[in-house]
Length: 237
Image 1 (cartoon, rainbow, N blue to C red):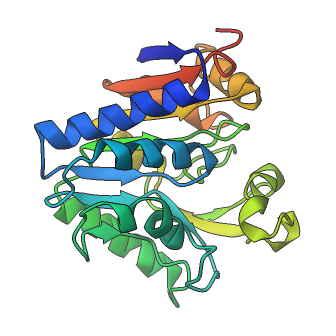
Image 2 (image 1 turned 90 degrees about the horizontal axis):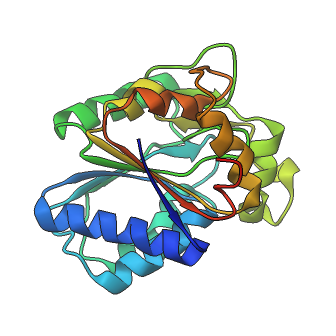
């Protein structure tokens, strides 16, 4: 695992944006796996400034809430607002999970088939939750290998309350998420973590244990992972 530490969150965000831009420069038809959340906003802002060519790229988003109608609170809308309306990604080349699908298990299977048909993910960008989750793979006794319906923890719902008028009770209790096997199948992974609230989760990744109680610890099994941190998130390493 390649660990890069920057003085602040802005430096970490710029570094991740440069990695994505470099991927598109070297491989214009790249398949990208992309996250949402507060940390990704600064990454996408810098990526737009860098102006890489998305015209041949394809993207797959990590996750989506269950049961939320297609309005500004969905992660689909988040991506449109912060990235896709500002780059030249052709219509239909951005792929999302549909949290409003009638058959959610069939929707998860469809998403996996779409990733396989695209040839797999070349570069997957991840954030990390304070409890060590990646995507919506929450800590537990076992983890799902493939895209699945996930039950969200109270801490994860609190972390996403900003999308729902600041009310954790308004955050859906379930989501759809890429599984750990899907994540580890990516040819390259970049994980960004900033802020003191992520330091404990980052330390747990380096405990020497691989455990479903810290889903991010499974990234130790991946042969091409870059961890991008600010000083606050790296405390204790």
